[in-house]
View 1 (cartoon, one colour):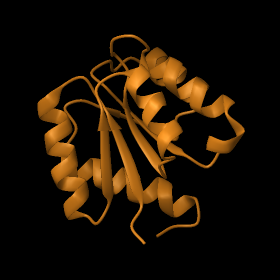
View 2: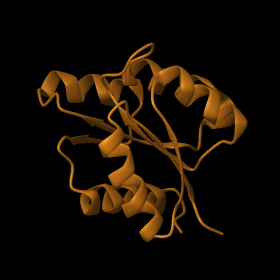
View 3: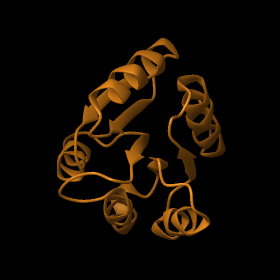
Length: 126
């Protein structure tokens, strides 16, 4: 059974690139363009991991991450945050919100797939 990944980003090209690479790596991939759509998607079908942009409309990635972590039924969901923000403070807040990994953009699709494999393997792996 393939792992389900939700890619959440408001940049269509990043979403397309991530989807292609992750599908090629054997993942089932769903997408959302903002934080509210991400939470709706998770309610419909809880993924194994979420790739989550920080800067998005409606709810930012930190807010979405905290909401995921606050829901007991979603406690197993791994979160990889993506952002162009590279400061130590941003990474700190990502970790405080509950992210399992924090990657800076532009992210190489292979690096993203590797990060997902690592966080999912830490959870009992594929």
